[in-house]
Length: 209
Image 1 (cartoon, helix red, strand yellow):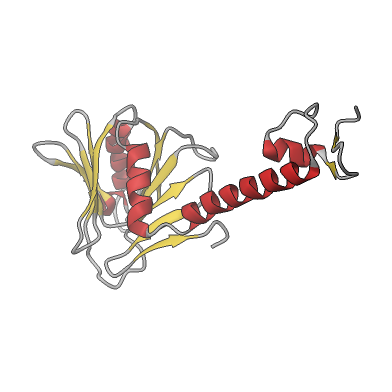
Image 2 (image 1 turned 45 degrees about the horizontal axis):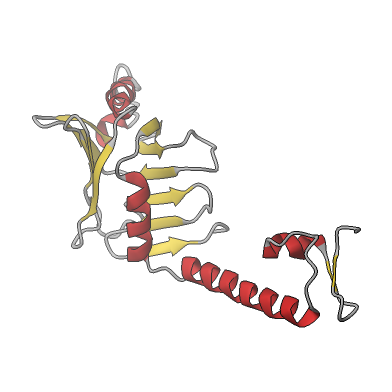
């Protein structure tokens, strides 16, 4: 055969690309009516699955992302000025895993004290060493790498995000400006969708936004 599926009862031809979509072997000979019914059923199932994923509410997407974050490990961290990026099962630029982006204001603490925060990470042009705070903050957030996420929660009244890690570390945001556009977001690196939270709203942004 030439790789196409030809019905014995009609001249209909199903191309290899369609066969791959249906996950049928190219050697299988079936009637045109059966092929059409099976194809339409499979097409509807695929459409329903895509619709379900894209019609999630922010709360449903948060639950889905939480399941992919809790119990997983921080592979990398990065300070972008005084915003903090945390990579779960991913490196920067990967199209897998999860990226959490903490906008100011945030802090990292252990069970007894605050270790660093976004204010310390801020460049201070008036200081004798303008980047000393940034360098100290960068050293402190290195403690996140290799840690397992124990829990993830969002405070309903404020939208603040809290991550607890093994070893007693806690990373959290806290609102300092209720009109700010964004407190944090979580990015699915595969789909490029982002779950974005401010003090006032909770939204999902599409890949092209």
